[in-house]
Every structure is written in C-alpha cells, then in structure tokens.
Length: 46
Ligand SMILES: [Zn+2]
Image 1 (cartoon, rainbow, N blue to C red):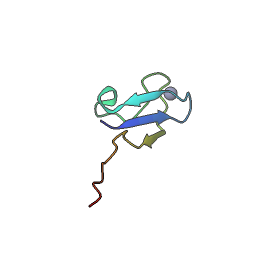
Image 2: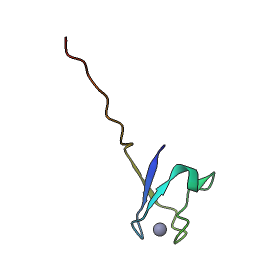
Image 3: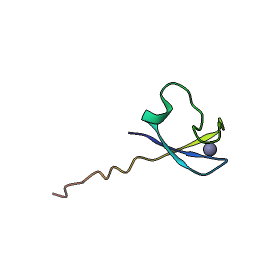
Image 4: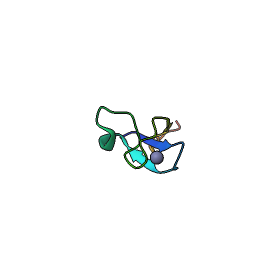
C-alpha cells in the first residue's frame, strides 16, 4: 500500500483513501508527496 503526504496540511493519506482522485481528503490539496512503503527487503548473505 502506498502512502502519500499532503504538502499543505502534512497528513498521511493512504492510497485506498484516495481512490481515483489524487487529492487530500482533509483539505482538498492536490499536491501529494509519495512516501516510500515501509517494506524492508531481507538480503541473505551467503
Ligand atoms: Zn491536506
């Protein structure tokens, strides 16, 4: 799941909250900053 941060109010918005409209549900700002997903890839050292 992708996370976005509103550039205006600074709230975190998840991609399922956005549906198809890329705007902040809190302040209707259209500029959202995409955050990196919190997925840590494990690298197995051999
Ligand atoms: Zn906002």
